[in-house]
Length: 315
Image 1 (cartoon, one colour):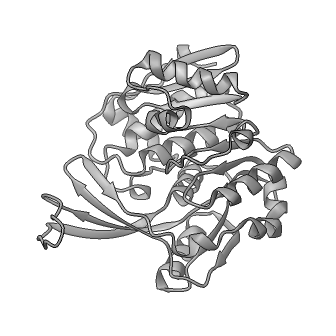
Image 2 (tube, rainbow, N blue to C red):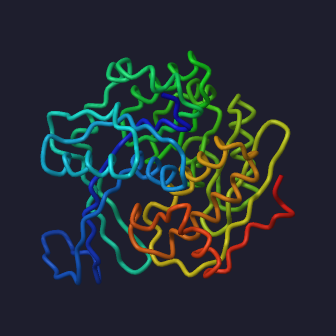
């Protein structure tokens, strides 16, 4: 079976606590509320693409506990192919999130995600081979990402690497094998060791990667939009102005949406505009996957928020 997208990466149960303030070391404080939801960068990106109608496969490791079983069922209910999802020996990955106003702090416990090793991918080469695109992040080991990139290159499948969370030990040789490298400005600065405060500085840093062989750099810059840089072009795709409620998972919704629109035939700038619009909707709602609308829900939500992807700007 062919898929539009195969996501190789993490799944996490989000354990979210709304707080008035962070406790000091050794202190206990009361918090207004708590809820649990499905998250993890890989699973978020897969879910966003599936919500928009892409055929999506996931290669991941869920835990041997009740959280892992719940996540396996969630994948199935979301229409995601779980041929590549297996049960590990550890508990499921979890991500305790602490939300204070519109800011958040997150702790990641990999759990079974750490068992998604390079050799595991060799069992699922058919999923990689039969996909239009492979999406990767850095919540799994870099060695597994590198194996995925090498396999995708072998089968001539383009890769989109979202380098989050940031890691200072990445191998530029493997990054240059990816079709798309999609950091935020902070991650871009850590890789290039260049300043990224202004748009011009971000452009210079992105061009430095292109000069070293990276094909397409897509930098997400929050409310300032998304910057696309390649060898012969640069373009800043503006964001859409909305009242943000919760930014958790917004970057993942952008990646999943871009992959959906791109693998369904849109050119890069058009797919970026649609991805910006989708991500703008998600930040007006709480949670990560809980804020990702389906293709059927999206038009009405965009209309309510005054989001219009200008048809004159589309290819």
